[in-house]
Image (cartoon, rainbow, N blue to C red; front, side, top):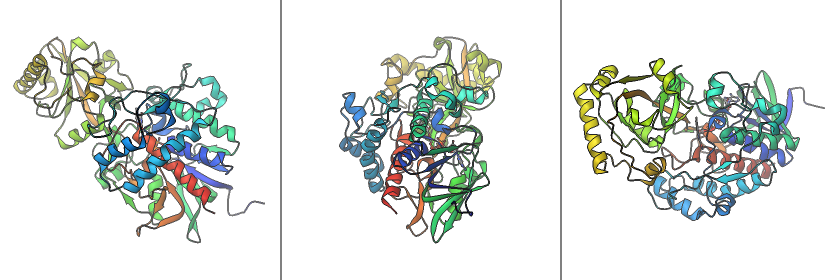
Length: 500
Ligand SMILES: Cc1cc2nc3c(=O)[nH]c(=O)nc-3n(C[C@H](O)[C@H](O)[C@H](O)COP(=O)(O)OP(=O)(O)OC[C@H]3O[C@@H](n4cnc5c(N)ncnc54)[C@H](O)[C@@H]3O)c2cc1C
């Protein structure tokens, strides 16, 4: 007989359904624990489903299979060089969990990964020039059958209110789809969409359950909060001083407004790193929403004065931080040689639509273009002339663009500084976007949420952007947000399993 105080009873309740949440839910359900996944929106996957699903989990069987000379030791050297030893215990927990979580996942017939070259983001000891991250294999939509519609579609289709195409699910959709397949096969996972977590229920000093979607759900072994950050909350961003804007975040509409963080704070949880996000440049689509833009292989970016202020080919979080420190508005300036955007954008941008909507402007000369975007014509012309001089010399004497392997990865080995001399010239507004905030609940290396005195709150765990990232204000390499979310969610569940 169920307890009348509860609408439903589980061993583990997971709030959110991104990569960390689904990994944690699968780990719990496959260990025989009755598990609920609570998702606020109507579909699963959040920003994780939008993502490229690069996963930075070092020293695993995936890199070994691909013949990549990766190891926990080299990853440790790299992380240590970037982060120091401040979060050494978390770093070690992450490194220890990486091979374990991958082995656990690949034991499941639904989950397979392959190495995908994508350079680490900093020149530091232990860096691998082709990176160490990997991605899930694509997933034919038919394999998911009727639950395919539960997976959030790619950014462009989702924003347009369209479902999946007939093509195999790729990237983040493949990751969430595969985790959902595996979770469903356990028979122990209950997926509840349209069920936002609104509160945590404490009994005898322990988190005993949640309030969600008007229900009281028991979690006798533990609650894992993996419900994203607060990137879409203008109120919380302003309160915490997160650069950028809730209107320019890449998170799905209506998803990540910090609900889980606030619920935990109400019962005494402590927080950290709250002014931080995984930043990126964003170009605006005709509807004004941002498109995550990376891998600039041409063009240059100017600030509000019409001058360059950074190496445009910097890894996107590093470029975002340069933007946060500079004065906008920012514009990408490029010429006709590129036949469209000289960069990668998610979602992809159609030049005709961009121009028709006025998000991009074009002009016959650089001076005229300057007039269109409101910067002094002489300054912009000087910026382009100086840049063209660097292109001729093959050296960016101001910002060293093209000197790092990351820069050259996107130019296909060719030059990264390419002259702007083929009219017409184009300008696209660039805004400071983000892939999610990265500050949140303070946790111990097992994902246990800590209270103000540093003691774990019994029964409460957090992972992903709901927790304060162990990487601090640094984005070390492709796949760190998702890799660390998966590793700490997995560790949290191992802790739940060990605890009675
Ligand atoms: C285009 C793009 C590409 C990217 N590529 C990569 C990449 O290749 N590798 C990488 O590591 N990172 C990548 N990122 C960043 C990464 O996707 C996110 O930072 C990460 O997925 C966040 O994971 P999360 O689980 O914290 O949040 P999410 O994946 O956003 O999941 C949070 C979920 O919780 C739900 N939720 C919110 N509030 C509640 C509530 N109250 N109750 C229940 N559910 C709730 C949300 O609706 C959402 O579904 C990319 C991001 C974008 C936009």
